[in-house]
Image (tube, helix red, strand yellow):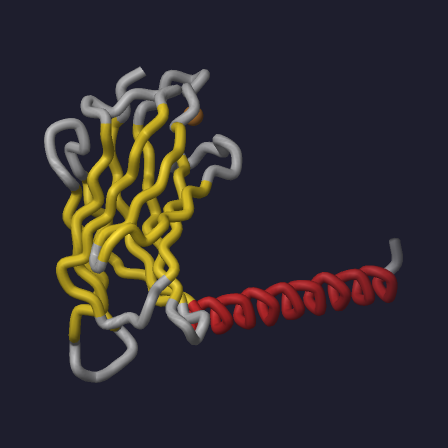
Length: 166
Ligand SMILES: [Cu+2]
């Protein structure tokens, strides 16, 4: 390879890197606009109690709670391959008629798309049903991402982690 070809090659690589960086940046900004994710990663003993959560508004200057509540999984202890009832109670809420979705996943491992949509059953109560599949690698840690979507399609989410019995 002569020097000229090498220069062209290096230029192309550089160009690609710039494009990649731009795309990443764009994605990041897009996320920031529609996704405000709380930083706290809560571990919960879902087998003996409900899991408390709260989501803070990191957007406004005044720090305030957007939603606060308890997610309860039944039956207890929570086992894989069983029909689980997810009950969510809001104790504080700034969102108008939010849609609530639970995204069930294993940290660092793809276990299939597994989302549970919660239905409103009374003023501050929501309920849905789902199954945690058994992990072939014997991992037990699950993450429940609670996603709230308000009328303006803005999303707020937080995570609850627990170790399942299987
Ligand atoms: Cu797994």
